[in-house]
Image (tube, rainbow, N blue to C red; front, side, top):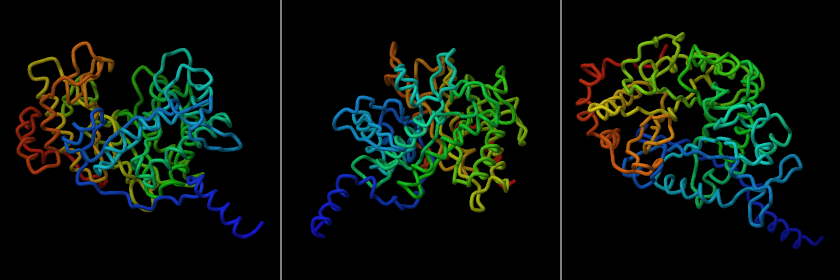
Length: 432
């Protein structure tokens, strides 16, 4: 073959398959001005609120295209070619890009929802996920070769698309792998399993996602999500249905080290002990040591302390923390909105005293009618709607002021609601 034709062929291959030839993005992980974040429903309102972090759900089963529709992107892994739903990818672009273009750090919460299509669920959902309960989120399928190949293909595609190498799509800086993985019966359905097997299956999925992200970005961060149960698991749930978050973390760290350590981080959900009671300062059952039943905002320093253990360090430093899902219920009482606002002020002040926390991503933007009666939003939802925004609550303006020079004055007004005389009474400093 003449050299000139060979060079043309090389150029043609490069142009037609940029993902295969692209170098990983080497941009350093940003340091935003504050930890203020939100699981965003309304982009313009989120920008007006001055957020620096945004959480967005990505449902990977919605990306599967079994019909290989012409024009949809494909990826081949282990000899299998997978096709992806470009329409959904573009819909995600329309959420991600307006936020990242404003300098807001976007965190993808990567989830595997049942699609109600058996041929798709067989590929994407873990085959041990229980089928006797209408669960909302399944574990990733790492049990079958096709499941592992699919997970690698879809995460490589997403990681490259939103790595920063393709600004037309927007950028994702954080990848939260699954949801509350220590609750593997309710919120990360893996079926009934003992702790070690639960961790093993999740660690397989995490390593696949980590490898995919590192191919596209050298410094994007990956996170393991936990609920607020710590040394105990959920009441009324067996040891094969949920595990203490502390034990899951420690076992995960051990298994990952044995197979080659990775730079994992923590995405915690420190809801109050009673999700229906916004008084975060009044939790009664928790303690301030590592044997506490739960980690909530009242004893959030417990998580920071734990991450300083030598066997949990990464390159000599503790893993980083984001708070990726937590909110405060609005009681239907005259003082309901003041209590919600005071809880946010309390939580914000607590976070300010824990330097390992990089983001406090509030949940929800708007009250949701199908969230078990909880009204966590910054906005009320419209009557007879699920989550259509209707009107702002008291917390909205307080949230807007978080991280600004006006914060201290406004937050101090809520001290009497909490019973504290000063925010200085809060425990902080994560050093053990």
